[in-house]
Length: 70
Image 1 (cartoon, rainbow, N blue to C red):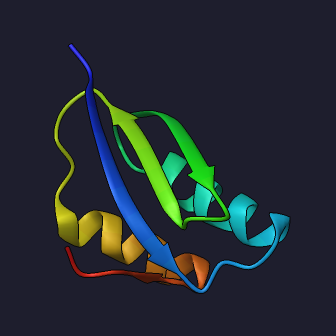
Image 2 (image 1 turned 135 degrees about the horizontal axis):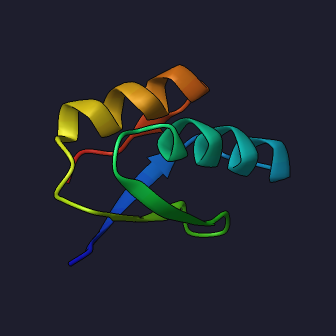
């Protein structure tokens, strides 16, 4: 069973931003797919199990962006 979660990431302005966020989130254990909508800042992550918000926040921070508070 897979879990799909959507987050809002702020600060992304170009395709490099999308690539950086996708790369960092894809590196999290269990992540199978990452889809980024640059216009809205929505990032949809499909994983094998629910991800810890702290892990997602750390990956987005590592990419140089910020996870918006829900």
